[in-house]
Image (cartoon, rainbow, N blue to C red; front, side, top):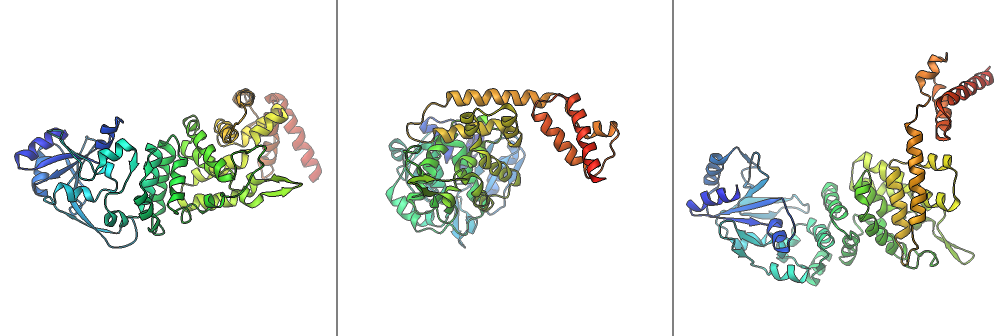
Length: 446
């Protein structure tokens, strides 16, 4: 469809270019299904007529000059000027200018690698700002001081691109980013950039390392900044402070995230799991300890999560995983009984993800010992837990059928029955024991 549009535009005297990520990724040999084209040299009304002949046109506001065709995954735009009107990411006045010229149109792009343009019909690459060389050298460099500084979201985009492509950020871009204020950004936009880094990067730690280089952790990620300098017992953590450990855990978790029920939540749990060490780390008899950091850190983790997202289910998942993250390895070392591991998995929002988090935590240190034995133990226990949970169990209807009248005490009876279920007691025996327990409770009330 892009070539059909380009041919029609050419007949009107204009040119059509692939722009942005699709050009960058084609040159870099990376698959990209998001296709963006930009139309130069014809008026918006003429482009609208062309699109109407080719399909059902959609439009995002007349001033934006952004079109689409229903049924095609294709963004169609016209060159436009943007003038900042405030501090936020959306505080811009936008004007369409079809005759702006390719250089000025590319100048509004964020980075040189994203400012590349490719003629749809001829394949000619327009590289006004050295994007191809920066791609070859794996350097992320901003296009223009003035246009870059107008949009503070570009600081986060620099960090997530650096993480996704494992590029170094040019010194001049780092220095410019240090001067920019991120305080007016909407949390939704910040979270989108963070999610891209957590989901698409093999080494998401680069995102935070770049934010650190830019001195830009304090507004949105102050809890991470506080991890720096919080020391750990060198016997177990030769990698150094909690920041170093967290970055290693995050990169380990990146290779496991797709095995978790909630990949984004899993990555956030890896990121936040040791926040509590800021509050609990102390030296006892010459040894560094962080007792109860997994629970003491929960309010701190909640504040962080609520700063970046309103997704209550996601927040619940992360808090649950972090509160439990120490238990799997503890269960292995103690060779805990099956009913104990059953209780742990029952508490977990994502039992499989909990094992993976414990594994990432274990491996997130220098010269970590093998995790094979622990993983095998935990996987076998998880299989046992799943089999237990598949069996028939005592429900409220069973208690009513046995003659108990529904009431507020039912929740206590069902909780007792659930404990028996986790202990592996068969339904018939569990029902009899629950009824006996209920009789005892009622007798005590009398």
